[in-house]
Amino acid sequence: MVLVMDTVSEILTPKLTKYIPYKPTPKQAAFLLVNNIKEVLYGGAASGGKSVGQLMAALQFVDVPGYSAILFRRTYSDLALPGALMDMARRWLMPYLQTKEVHWSEKNKMYTFPSGATLSFGYLENEGDCERYQGAEFNYIGIDECTHILPSNYTYMFSRLRKTTDLNVPSRFRATCNPGGRFGDWYYDRFFLNRGERIFIPAGIYDNPHVDTEDYIESLNELDPVTREQLLNGNWQIREAGEMFSREWITEVDDRDLPDHMRIVRCWDTASSDSTKGVKGRRRSLDPDYTASVKMGYKAGIYYILDITRDRCKPMETEQLIRACAEADGRRCDIRMEQEPGSSGEMVTDHYKRNVLPEYNFDGIKLTGSKSDRASLVSAACQAGKVCILRRCRNKGAFFDEIDSFPYGSHDDMVDAFSDAYNFFAKSGTRRSPIGISKRGGSYWNRDNYGRGGF
View 1 (cartoon, one colour):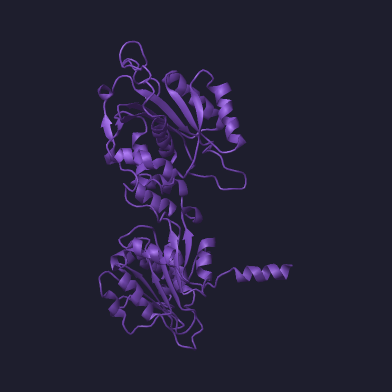
View 2 (view 1 turned 180 degrees about the vertical axis):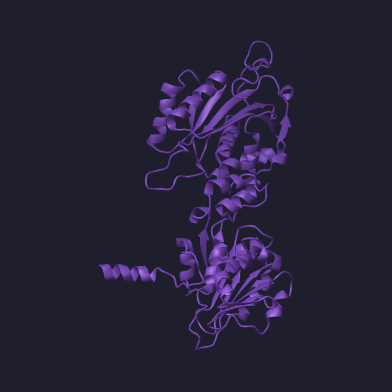
């Protein structure tokens, strides 16, 4: 058994040289092991260790006489940035440069090793830059941040990937990148839609133990939702804002713009997630789902988003939150909640009817179709200018971020509640007389009461 395990361990351990100062992460090890595949894309999300993996792969065979590798970025400036490939290689190889074991040619941007193997650096900025390498021969070609590289330059470099029959090294073409970039669509098509014998090895921040994950996520939170989703989750499918929604389609209104006698509903999308704990034996999620609700009013063909809640709660806290909002909204506000399929969903709905909200007009919503299907009607209403949002609505910014990235964003809790609220009115029609909720007098819509009840 020990011999078998030793054999397995040897198979799963990539070849390394002394010039690689770090032990590869599991994803980097996979990247270094697939030497039977000519073309591989590695990465996806930011801080997954893809540039480190790229340099490791280039240095794997520098102990073999005749081996040659080259690493590309769009410009030399990109290569020389702090932490970028050329800067990283200098730090890794500095002890051997000081002893003159390894030689650096500034003119040729090339390291030469005792075996005679070489590691070069190049750029592919403009159309035709690839032709500067005409006649060159490399056993390893690495393209870092390939989505910024012209496809014509990328494909031409395959003509430079070759070796002699007596050289016992694999021929490898390796690319790394994040989603997006000027030519992202072309690379998405190449590696995901028409991949052939190419493979993609995903890696993200959670695969890199050397990164302060929570600190980096906090930094990514400053980005727009599309870029954040690309860098944090390696999402290739997300596109610019407006694929299904755009915040520009929703009009902001003040309190005085709200009509009298609106029908009101608050719809809930619940998630029993506690962000402080994880499941035993599994990594704690740093970005769990939310319990979200959207309170919406309807009058004369216009829909008004009045309040949005967005909380991470334990199950008991969720019940308390829903009850508190119901008390603040008043009994004239209908309450609806997404109901999971099967008997368990029916039991939860019955529990809320009997024990949590017995004096309110509460019911479950049995869901049909995909999230995108359910959002299609409200998306069309937004585009037609029929949806408004109260200017001082809570969580308005987070809501806009979420609809901008829907349906490919990492969260859709508010969108689900938004869709359910709209569909509540769309399915019930307008034949029912609006409940008499007035902004005047002693009703809940009295402006003196505005701001209470979840606004």
